[in-house]
Image 1 (cartoon, rainbow, N blue to C red):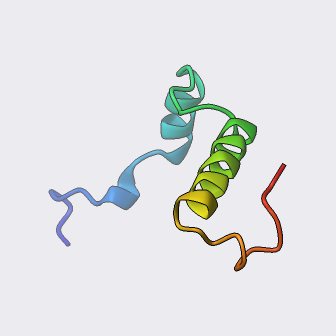
Image 2: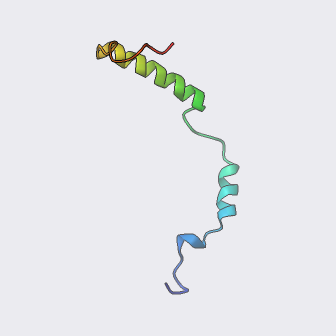
Length: 60
């Protein structure tokens, strides 16, 4: 690669981290929120697909 061309490896990693560190999180929620949503989905699928005999129990 010539000196005129840039590579992704030429970026300053600390600059990128600093940029994202200053941004407010825009994710779907905390991991706990996602886990609770997964439990609800799991229980709904057990009921909907009549899989109660395949799982030990529904998650409370």
